Length: 70
Image: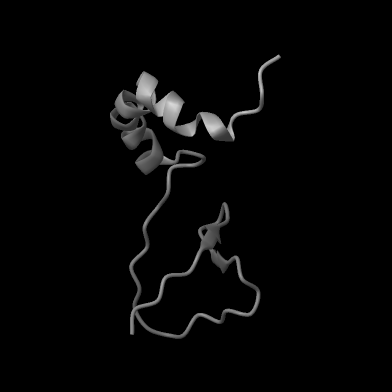
């Protein structure tokens, strides 16, 4: 069974699971390195979604959720 866990890698290259109860079993694994604070999928989707979000119809559709303007 495949399982994904979040880990931190220290300056010496040691892998430390973020969940303290997780014990890494012996064996093989694949490691995906994440780029710091970047939330790439959200950044890639932003421009495409903005085309719809910025339409006047969207403001009207969601207007009932906006605070009343004085």
